[in-house]
Image 1 (cartoon, rainbow, N blue to C red):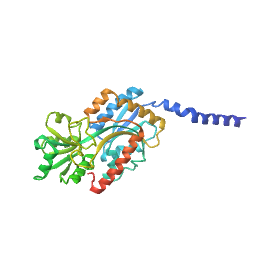
Image 2 (tube, rainbow, N blue to C red):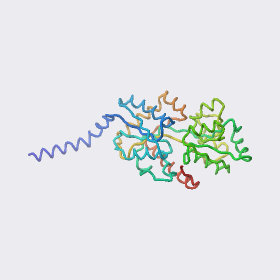
Image 3 (spheres, rainbow, N blue to C red):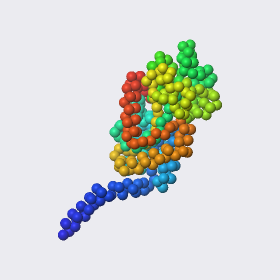
Image 4 (cartoon, rainbow, N blue to C red):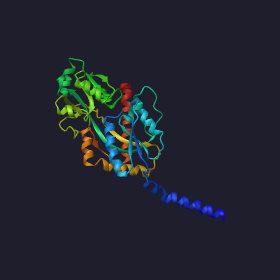
Length: 325
């Protein structure tokens, strides 16, 4: 009799797990604070965007959303931390497109994670056009001016760091055009822009958000954008393709990942919230200020973008011999 009751109870629990327990558990998520790791210092574009999203998400789910900055090794330290976290949806990673290529350019270890299969993609929140910008003091107002100036002097370009998407774009443009702009790496966006503004370096490859105030003030000029089509954030600026420079399309992006093995129900819940958040008018406006355009979509969109960048830039990095500092 006792055995029969025990068997019945086991069967009932199994049926509950198969039919009801999963959805009920998903409906209770989240039941405690969520931590979103940013693998870069506070104050940058990535950090500013995730804090914007976190505030909106917290309001929607009724739980605190904590931002945890874990900078170092081009983002590898923070990414590695999340890859080893429990896959319960309470530790997430908000990453820029450097996520896809960091391991490919580092001289040291990979951080012990698989960038393609070691995470659960949740949503690609947005894209950020990359642009070639010149200081007004350089006298370079167009790509034609740049080409002419490069014939009589050695020009340099700044980037936020060796192995960054901006550095890779610069080397791609050099190869495609025959230009020989020398790369000057900096430890972040702010110091790179400061030296361009100060006249120490005439050019930089950068996203549009950090330089917007200086563009409006006439202290910097945008020469070209690296998207396939003109950007809504700079509609009067030609693409490299329009200027006759082929195959140098490089678009930065941001995405939300979790540890490998997250529940599909939790992923669906987070994806739905973020798809709604990035449509909010105040969020769209703030994203534009930071140089980002909302994207959204399914987790598969982020997975495909990540895999495509890993494969494409892996070839380019190897071909051009690019390494991080």
